[in-house]
Length: 374
Ligand code: GMT
Image (cartoon, rainbow, N blue to C red; front, side, top):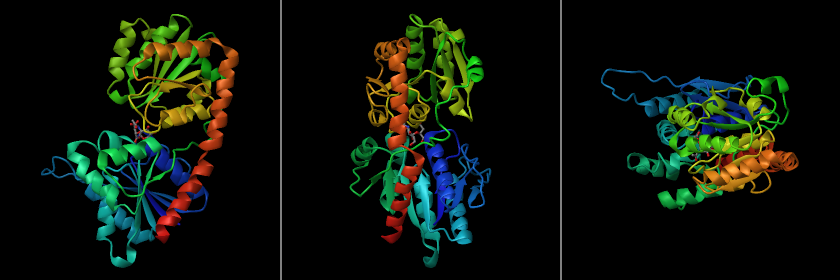
């Protein structure tokens, strides 16, 4: 198949999934065209059937807000005309589903393409639910030829928020288990912590929904019983407040601010526990990548997280904001080597069974074929 994939290029789950999907489909012999305003951060598996097309957004003094959605629609149309795409897969509804719709309308009858939109989470629960974007998001969902969602929870939320009745397919997120795999590199570990210290890790875009302050509070409680260090990976608006809180709680010197890490798997492999105390997560790709490296996860009992983190097997789930609960699970796991090891094994095993990219990509292929036939 000739497939176009539209996504955000920046650090974030939707861009990561779109790019990994494109790379995996290319490995399976499909011709893939990635369309975005910059090269996606996960795009590194270059091959002759995997192409990147940059969307150029020109500025003009009259534009207070340069119209990216229109530039994207024009670029999609251009790529379809030049390459004869069969199908366009838009990741994240806003504005990608709408630009895809526009491009499809603009194309001549003999070049019409099918459009599939994958809903990732905040495009429905936060941004899409805002008054400014709600109607246009509903329109994008309705007008797509196919819609997928990353979890059962997101399926129900999409129906609830938008009153959508159309068919939507749940295809879970996935992980490259060859890249994200266990394997301790002692020299690399020593860069972050002393041998007797446990490493807690959190990776996100540090938006309020991630509740990063809870992560810092968990570290402070854990440190009352076990020597530990916290590695914070990523960047975002809540990061300065997290640093302030760490200082207030007297743990500032035990927090490593690692910034954006391209090879995050290296860090996951040397860590002992992953923390994701989010307000909600439609799926929680960061947790899945940690589990794939054999890292147990302590998270909140919200959204799609209970599907990804198996309570009492690969990690633990607590109510949102229940820091003592998360800290006590952390202390328990870190203090018992045998049970920690069994969580590590269960985490990896579950990922291999349910979330391996090589299996999930086949679900996407089947869905593409189904939509193309329809
Ligand atoms: O909110 C984010 O963390 C970023 C956002 C994105 O689009 O990159 O993440 C959403 O999509 C991911 C990929 O499907 C999911 O794993 C995340 O759970 C989801 N975030 C939320 O629902 C908050």
